[in-house]
Length: 371
Image (tube, rainbow, N blue to C red):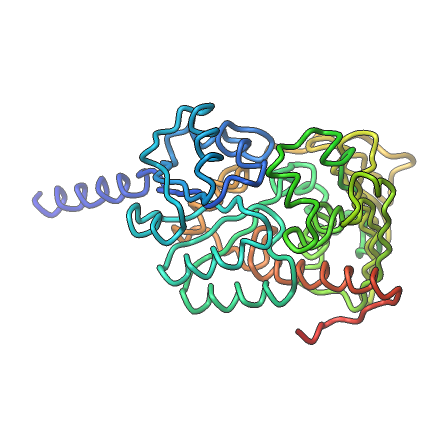
């Protein structure tokens, strides 16, 4: 009887520990997607950080106190959450993980600081402004034994998972071609915040323009579909169709990735007449086209014409970035080749860096890069 009571007590304690909210902090407020994380959007299908009980916000590091005050007033955030830098934030709050909403160039220093303290990281896409920076973060993560995850809105699209599963299950035959379309009317036309616009249009802080802002989605999806394999060549053409608005960065990018048995075409744009994030997956015997986050058009070898499919809802922890983060930290998910995984996103960084070099030189770039 005593043994049974002790066993039950242990089970209850274990359940309580697993149910404890994940303690997260935020580094940076200049990335506009932070608003979607705080209040819920397609970025966080399970709900905003401030409205859910499975996550606790313990602090925010932002060097611009005036920017923090804007968020504090709008979102009723306590001034006690404020810290001027990541080091002080970690020292005083001891978070389980840090959510990064700096410029892309700011990711490297945040990851290195977090890794020194053994704190895990989830950042907004893409991982890095260069392949060299991606390798620095990978080295820091390995040294600090921390997880570094990258969040993309499209990771939580049931339609993408359905297309992936159709391919993996053999319904489409061997993969031959993938075409990915991502973008919108451009940061100015959709009225992003001034602090967001400032770094999105700075090639040092963003890596490029539309090429990095939206090319990363397709590179991430293709690396996932290819089970972690990198392309052999990258060829890119970038343009300045709105040079009066974006004089320093591209607003149009088309990238071709070649593999021994497949090809991908990534179309990233700040010139679409509307928002779009969709993908076409062509196998040797069929295809699946995602139309939005739920709907697909599918044609298999036995079909006389394509048919419409509504994707099955994703289940936790694969339905939401914060669910996924918690599962990774608890050892329930091995993220090595997932869409959010560091290995996948180091390859994404290599692809984007190669694309930037190709666009600049007018030549095809062969991988691996030497950086």
